[in-house]
Length: 609
Ligand code: ADP
Image (cartoon, rainbow, N blue to C red):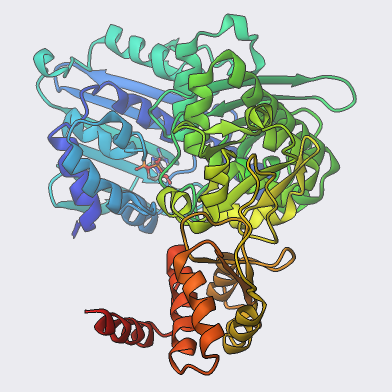
């Protein structure tokens, strides 16, 4: 026998379980049954796909209690685990981000939302047991099985189990019942029945206790919606997603005819913590005629809808279908297109039927959904229709349709400005004339916004237009104040002096209070995008921008007179640089040589004190 230590994170999680941070302790049984059901699926699949020799004629889960000894046993004749697997799977927490979540969890104490972010799984047994024994034997391996035991403290023991049959048996040595602490008598027949019915009715293998089968085994997706309660759907959602928060929306689909399939999809109410992590699990479960084929089937749903959970049961696929074949299968591609359409239209319906749910959806998943604008040009329209954006019109996000509705007379384009934060965008000099003239501007601050705006030309026949690009010609109500004097020579002089930094220096129509701002040429990429490419390791030539000056600003007017008086004044080039640097800072840009800028500024200030 060997005594081993739990990995640090696992120990932490166990601690939380032992000190029962979660008030509903009944769920331990759901977790054990869920694991057992997975193990049975795996065994059947190993036989089907890898030709493993195994008896799968009576796959089932068995529950046994002994009130005297205060034990509860959950047994399955599934795939089982090898010794190494037991140590690896039960002794550690492999899931990324779990450690991080644990930290938060400790701070938040009793917070079901947080706990819901990871499947507590097997460890939940320690909420109700003070000792747990697991005996397992992996299908297809000769010799003895493995016995694992722990009291949920820092260590567990591992030993050989000579006569263990294929599958896994888990024995809980129950704590004394304490109903005040929601710790019920889990040897009570009725309690067991109630829990199984409540949480695990849809499990597709029989869950037996004595001669009785406790669950109906009906595949939820195959039953008409009217016959299934929300509670049943929610339990199923938990089983497949490990998210304990109820889903935001449930979608049923059924296609008949040449290619039959049924789908049951869930839109979660909350983004998982790893929504933007590359290695995160994603995809749907694939079944063929009620037989589980695989988890995480990415082929069924595009990446930008990766948060959608659920099951697709296709009637006409081969049970042996592999991931490689799946990728090329025409039927699968067709199902995927239909699912996308259905998910997008469901969200669209939510916008009118339940604006609150829609707002939650967009807050949680909008950032991911916008990636679809890059991935699926054919779906620009339906994606834009369900999108919302921050705007200068009030603090609530707006849809594009609502923006178009509010457009001023004569306004033909949808204005937006990208940036790193709302305040940065709002205070950007580019915004001045638009604010002054009462034009609404969309505030786009997600990294993905920088990219999609380049590939989406229009919405509803209205061009999407960055206000930091090209020239601006707002039809102003009042007559434009004509600048006094000729700026030609000054602009020529500055263009030459700032040649290395800017393409051109010109007068601006977009400034009301600032002296200067930088704009991109209509066809050039934006600095933010340039920065992103650079961060991804793609070097390219620096794209020069255009410096625009506000002729009505005293500084610019003064500069013009100074240049007129003495074109070779040695202070003028420094002023030009300061002007450029200030424009760059105002939009949140980075100076090439901050130290030099600081010195120029300090010297200049010194002359004024
Ligand atoms: P999760 O089920 O969320 O992955 P658990 O802690 O419940 O987390 O289980 C960890 C792993 O241990 C499972 O993913 C599975 O590989 C293995 N496991 C648990 N129970 C069984 C079982 N009854 N039969 C076979 N393997 C199991």
